[in-house]
Length: 337
Ligand SMILES: Cc1cc2nc3c(=O)[nH]c(=O)nc-3n(C[C@H](O)[C@H](O)[C@H](O)COP(=O)(O)OP(=O)(O)OC[C@H]3O[C@@H](n4cnc5c(N)ncnc54)[C@H](O)[C@@H]3O)c2cc1C
Image (cartoon, rainbow, N blue to C red; front, side, top):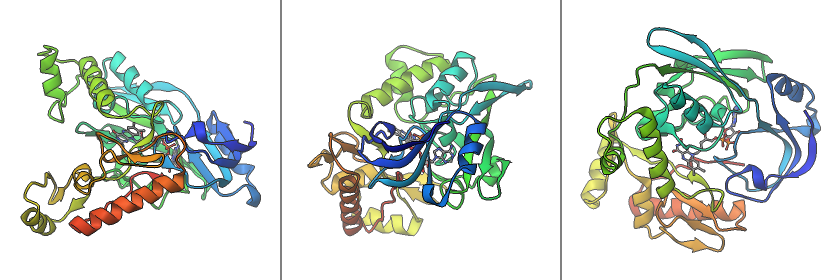
């Protein structure tokens, strides 16, 4: 492990924001993680753990140590009649894990194809797409507790998973460094086809009895056509979460805005943030190099040289407009530093 000084983070965040880290290290193993934390001094604090940088917005230089998790390894831990348990190092690229599972005929994560970032970051916001969330297939999460200075494992019930959140995003944020995951995958995959355009796309290509491999291909096709590729246009996926409102609040909203789309979410109602942002006139708008994507208003983009402050100012402007028009407070999904 080598600790470097004064390193640009531009290529380490998918927004492509130019900021510097005072200290920077890539950690390739659990030993590197332990060595890194034991070598910290008051001068090299605080610490920011980074995966693929696809869910962060840097608004200033980081005056501490940035540690990029790069550990690799996918190992079959055990297997029973119905499941295979895979242990995955935190630094594996998530989509490589999905490809591995699909190539080995293991079902459960094919709908999560092409989500950028590290496997180890998945539990932080309980990644989800096309009707599947990581918590659905997670068996355990192994972490280094850098406060108590020991390793421990979390079972899903202890992770406080919710919609784009977990204990690792809240009170465990600066305490637990995820070192590996164990996924419980199906030997006889149960396909989830009822979300978004999956069925429509399968029909289009004439697939009547889909496999997990076909689902993966379809999801990749849909996502590639809808979401901007960060290597071409800087972004961090959805910048905001879809707001969830109470049934009473929804009754008020639908009276005033009869065309407002919505989805049931337990006893509450989820409202598409994209619709709210579009109604406030932000869809496709550009302010200098910071902008709102032309097709996906939940996605903020960097046209080249936007600053993190510029992106954040745009986000705050959107939040204020949505609050004023609908009385709904949008919450930022991306981790802002
Ligand atoms: C084009 C695009 C599409 C996306 N689509 C989706 C989607 O469909 N669904 C979805 O849920 N997300 C989506 N995202 C968001 C993002 O891909 C996920 O949140 C992903 O899990 C982030 O992984 P990362 O390794 O890049 O995290 P980073 O951005 O590196 O880190 C995110 C947060 O996790 C913390 N962290 C990172 N690694 C660890 C670790 N090992 N232990 C503890 N904390 C850690 C960081 O400190 C930071 O606070 C999308 C992003 C993009 C750019």
